[in-house]
Length: 266
Length: 212
Image 1 (tube, rainbow over the protein chains, first blue to last red):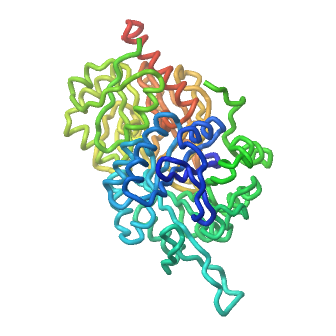
Image 2: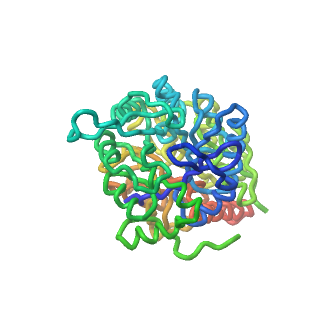
Image 3: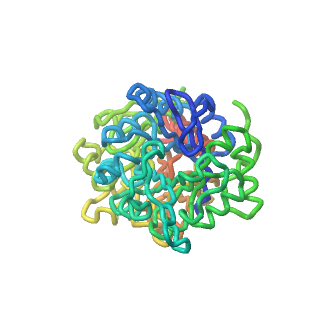
């Protein structure tokens, strides 16, 4: 059986790792290559690198960051942020990404997903979905629902997150990176209801993102149907390590990849 | 001395990760789709990301079908990864009317029984006792199709490593200096690096006259 995956996420802006809360208030969190190498040595199953640069110059440096990270690590690398055209996706693959995540541009033009799938394959095509809970409105007992947010979470699109995921998979997305805007950077735990709704709507693997602080949070996400758990702040801030999280998951009987001995410095 | 390694330019494959993995082992691969180079290279990597039909189409258009077949039949150092491995087979359910290279006597079908597809992630690789390059360990997979575990493989001298996701499937095959992996050794951390190193050592040995 395939192992559950633990995926540290590097949000990169102008060549530096940054992290905020609900996508805002970004603070510096180190050098991307140093972070990548240390997470890979700690047992990361994949890395995710999201370019959150706001400018064209920043985007150019993101390709260089991908190249440098790829040269240093031998585990899979998913890259997202600013992918607007098939050429952007191809450029990131050439630089060393193994999977490309699309977000805002695909919402505006869903065919982008089909184009990337046709040229690069479903195993390269990831939908990055930022979902915020809708206000409950008049009926507090109504089931929860989520809408897609863009522009660093500052704009609610009105698009239903679950429907969007379903459409993206039908167009060829091979994986969904589902970030809860409400939980991002808070340490309050993943939005398990969001994950459960997505897991029953689509049959591709689901990466849980937004809110992780403990191994217990990760277990909740896995029970909700996620195949992988992503976290950023807790690893950047030294709250815990990938190794520690995986040891805790293994102790709870979860099927994770564990290095047999402590990583050696080469 | 590390051997001269040529990476087949298929146009549909991502070669950056394979290149980076070989560089970390001190090998600078050359990218080529020239049949003479593929025929004459000390070692060849057939990477694979993308679809079976498009992959075979590119090999045919570049005139690489015959040189690749010859390499595998002679046991010359050749590494086929993911779709590359599937292309060694007879055919694929992904593109039923397109014949593969036909050097590995088995077929490619959709992975069935897996809870979610594509099969993304690390899974256990369990080699036959006959494997000399492949060892037991966890490797990284990213695929929805896989080779049938046909007895014809062993009959033609292939040793098989298996994995399990919904059903047992062929994780890798080896014969002489030919290695075909459904998983991605270039993305499989220390396990993958060690496997690539053993393949490069086998290639160097083969070239120094250890095997024909």
